[in-house]
Image 1 (cartoon, rainbow, N blue to C red):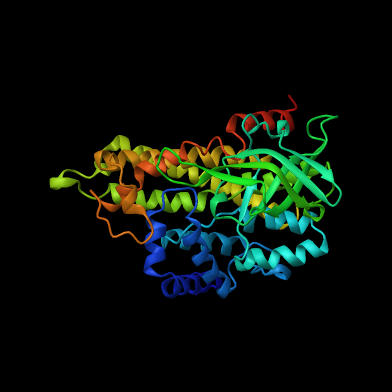
Image 2: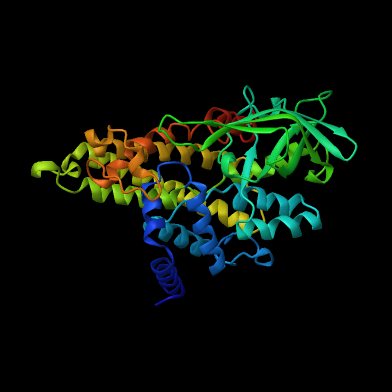
Length: 395
């Protein structure tokens, strides 16, 4: 048995003992982008007790020092075990940004609290009229002594209803080009003048919110980086958000879908995989995932070597979200009429409600609906094409 086989067995043994049936059930029935915070936080704390909550962080901040191969194995085994998917807002987005731009005091304060799960973060980027065109944001912060006074709104704010912290882009100067005059702030969400209102998605999930600021005051030491230079910080964070891994989880999901579609239907009707057309589409999706996996391996190898992947993160975002939508479309087709009933109650954490049809069909429709937004959030794919046209092709 080689070292990677030994590591795989270690991960499997841990998951078998630490992933409770309740958390596994919640992970299996989660149809949103991430697990609801009560579920995700419970699982995050179990991972932290093991020392695996932030595996990609540098070891000096609590990371594992794993290789790319080990990280891939870990993600694959999490997916196979149906572990809850934890929001990356803290561990994979604001955490690395604090490491890169934070003061010693900010690093010492925030990183341990992110690692332990004590702080849960929301992202204050998009606004009505300023989503993919983020530089046009207008939520304003004015300096008043030792405080910034914030007025405006943020929208599509994932998990704001459960978060106690926000990393937020605000406009502090409107006199120059749009990218200048943007500032990156870190602050509490329970401050006076901050109101959070829910946005329920078409799948029935409450993941998104709109956050309103009415003379909300945050201390000046909330500033990350330099005032009016938040665009530099934002671009670094977006590289992490857009350049995430897609293929490990999607390949596992496609394999589970292949198995589900290979079972005979109701009344002994032929399995869907017996249809050459559907089987060909499943196989074509796997070829596309394998191709993207090769690109991911090359780019994450470059990151591990200390290189910056730049516009290549846009390639990952485009292809990753397109393939995410493809896999959920195939799952919806495999579910057939069992995917049509609205059965949100049966997917709630701790619910004992029964549902109609085979279990994989329970999440097919809500996942399909949620994934329609995948090519829009984190910068629409149209914008990513424009970035590539400019940065790579020089157009």
